[in-house]
Amino acid sequence: MRAEDTRMFQESASAGEVVRSQLARNAPLMAELGERLRRLPPTVALISGRGSSDNAGVYARYLIETGTGTPTSPAILSASSVYAAEPRLRGAVCIAISQSGQSPDLVASVAAARAGGAFVIALVNADGSRLAQVADVTVPLHAGAETSVAATKTFIASLSALAQLIGHWSGDTDLVRALEALPGQLDEAFQRDWSAALDTLVRAQSLYVVGRGPGYAAAREAALKLKETCGLHAEAFSAAEVRHGPMALVKAGFPVLMLAQDDETRADMASLASDFSGRGAKVMLAGAAGDGGVVNLPTADAHPAMQPVLLIQSFYRLAALAAVARGHDPDRPPFLNKVTETV
Image 1: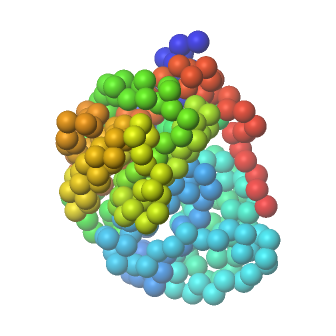
Image 2: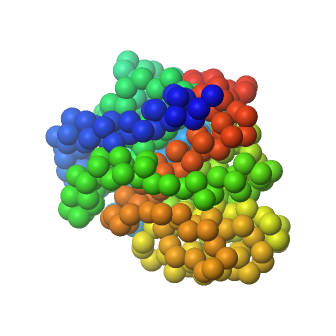
């Protein structure tokens, strides 16, 4: 099997075209939603999602809190689906993210949020889903069919939709304009050569993936994909949190993949990379310059909020290559299905 022949590789390669179409088709709706949210304005934001969609929610939380000042939290889905709690959310916005829109716990949580007074926006890829039926407004991801079990283009489509929504909500014209260049940048990011990290990933048994700010969303997604497609135990940490205990496991030869963006967190990420390298760790760093003991992975300049999207796109190519090199089929992870329905 060649990695280039897998659906994961091919679907992730198509993300630029997906985002190009999505941004154009959703532009009027996003402008309208942004104006509506500014008129509201929400007292609090809840983000609902599972798996890769939950990782996309981390990206949303950083953009919302830094861009609008609105306190933002992940929703506890089981509070409604298992414990039958009735949330009081008048004045809140709930943003639900899902590829299929079918998971019972997600649908129950969103329905309860709406019944509790929240304004519900659903970002969903599947037409006619149960999630769309319980939302106030549905934003299509327009990613098309995704047949590989590992989500790639739908994750990137979720990030671009969130950036477009939050850019209009916050009135951040620089962010909205930056999205115009994103499709072409995604095409370029997929061609970035991260093969310098391949041998380390093929030989690894476990590793850390580290990010901070919106890049923490990319770190979480990368760790999830390494588990799903490569059978590799990977844990994601923020650059701040890894110092509170997990750093103790980092010794000579321990692999660490770091994903940084050019914002206020970049210097801290570079400093942490040096700390890891000083312990003898095998550090693979994208988005910042490391010292002589660090493997630097190539990236391109972009708006800081776009860089995590581009980093995960470059990573997807690497993950497909690593999966095949480790003897795995990235399209068919064991014990997983494309649509996971949890209660």
